[in-house]
Image (cartoon, rainbow, N blue to C red):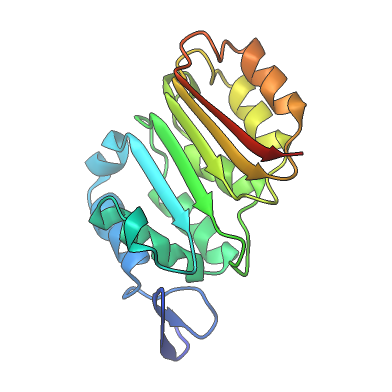
Length: 188
């Protein structure tokens, strides 16, 4: 990858923020997903944490901790990683958290890459939190691609650019029919 390495709270990253092969999140994606194409095809849950500060109470499994280190990567490198590891045809749960302190926030096109290749009709969990720059485009695109009817948990929190247009489109696509958990907080 080039550049000199420095230790950070999120792992080892090169000077340009592109990540190195020693970065825990990059290593996990390469070993578990790229190293075994069958794994990418069988991934049903994508828990992605863009969090600068570690909170041990939030760690549910070791893979989640590794994914947190992606917060230190520049957006350009994250986009490259999603292109390398995707698609995830068996994806059933799209869960993306971001704290307000990461340098390069997640945008619509990055969320699109995360679910690209999945069958949106099979998504049962859509959980987006703290994605301050996400607009209606992401959820409207998901809804128009068929996401909705199978969703049992819709959790939208701290999405300042999201309007009721997203909710209307999700409802039109059948979201609500099987919904068991609905969490809407701090939307535009």
